[in-house]
Image (tube, rainbow, N blue to C red):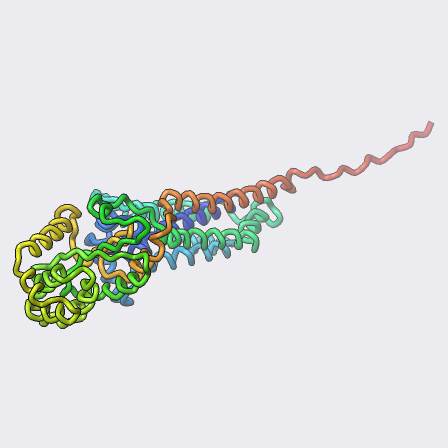
Length: 407
């Protein structure tokens, strides 16, 4: 039954690689705020390495938007599907050839990581699984000959390629593909920084937005914050981070902190929508007047020390205390959203009131259970096949002829 067990090994390795690749697909789509690897992780360093950049540029030249994990996921699923048709020597060798090509690529990636002394856990999982799978596929292709008809080996091959086994592995592969997407929707967020934790309010979803009114990405994210704030349980706290290279950032920030609190949201809407050339001191004052604020009081506040000190404190909080790198940066409850990821912000706001979070280690446990069930089923069927080995059966003996002796 060596062929059947080697084929099962190849499928298992492919399933493990698919799990890790699905996680990488999610992180590549959310590069600024990855769900699994972390923004400062080794995964990002590998991705932005010379080799990673060269591969990305090559794939983009083939098809804009094409990313390595997405391509790899499709290839891995196709390889699993091909294993359902591996019954002859020719198909076994074709599988071995495909897996060997994958192993060469995996070895190249491992070598690049060794050279950088930086190891992406998910990349290494994919690479090692593919290499082990390739070894199994090569052994499958070149160990032993064609099984004899009606032999245990032939019946075992029938078992690992029959419709029942195909269905079991199909469900398993679908499960390990989908699991990371489920976990990404319910992340186990790290503890909030103390400064952000202090802003939380019991029974409320607090959105803490570090922003610049002239920043184009902040402007892009603003409608999502407005949409989320329509829920009565949502509280929006905007923290001013006017960037020096935006000429209108400081005047607009001063106008915002100087209007009454009940008029700040309306003014923010106008500041985000205004032409950047309008975000001068005079233009910001005019917008403040449009929302009903006293322009004289606002003008006096904008020229005072208190407003500038507040903005300086908020910038210091962002860049020094929180080690912020760019705006917009937003906390939605316990979820950190980097950049203008409107969909993620709305999703985080909708689930922030729940307490559901799924730790990453549990994702691997769930995947291991799914694969183990399929392996247990396969092994039990193979053992039952061996139990009825025709070679072990004893042919019934013919009765000896009875001879009569004459007296």
